[in-house]
Every structure is written in structure tokens, then in C-alpha cells.
Image (cartoon, rainbow, N blue to C red; front, side, top):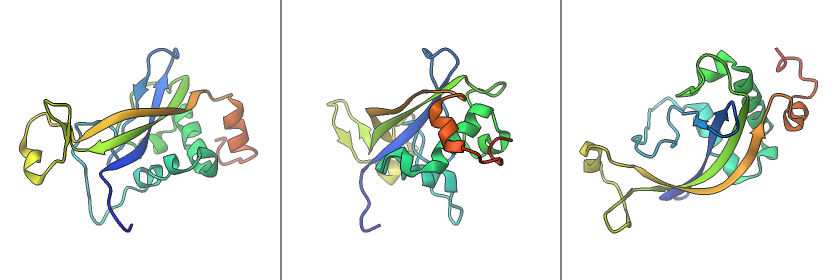
Length: 162
């Protein structure tokens, strides 16, 4: 990368059983919760977290693996869920998923509602928000196992159906 930015676009995957109450899936290293300290674990690169960074840059149809990931989450596939940081549905998978794109700004919000850049010393402050998250758009509404989008994504791929 030619330069590092202080803002980035991230996707958040949410699950629900009723379409009203949504719970976030967490990830091991990518920004999701605003108060989670940014992680860098060298030489390990969490491939799923890193790959998800590219999804909001182009339409998800250019990332067929992403729809397959959502399919596996809806199935409750334990191998896929083990790659994630937090599963809000540990007993049974959700009935539907929603994908939201957010803009994350690196830094914290002070009393004047201005974003200040975090420094190394900030990591010692209690309850600091490392990111400010702003809504951008819903990329996928109410995705279910029998959705047309899912059936088109998996097609006749016998490996995905099991």
C-alpha cells in the first residue's frame, strides 16, 4: 500500500431470528467493536479478516467467496465459525443475515465531538474507543438459506451443500 489512511470501510455481518433484533458477528483482528484495540499479530495474517477488507471496495458480486461464507454461517458450519472472533448464535444458526457497510475513523471522539488520533500512550487509558463508526449502507438485507442470492452463489457446487 502506498499510504496508510485514518479511515476505512468495513463490513459487519449481523444475524437475526426475527428480522427485528440483530446481533453482530465479531472477528479476530479486523475492526468491528469500536473499543477493541487494533491488533497486529506478526507473522500471522488472519486471512478471513484481511479478505473481508476488500469486500466493501467493490460490489460483493465480485467476491463470490463472500456469499459462500454467508451460506456457511447460515448453516452453522463450525469450521467457518471457528475462523471468526464472536458467534452470537452458539446453539443454533440465525434465520437470516444482514451485511452493513460502515466507515471507520481511527481515533477517539473528545468532548467537543472532534476526532483525535490515538497514540501509543492511549492504549493505557480505560474504556477508550479506538474507532468512530458511521453508518454507510446496507449491502444485503435479510439473507436466508433459501434466498435466490444464496442458491445462485452455491449453484451446483456439491462441496458447499454438505
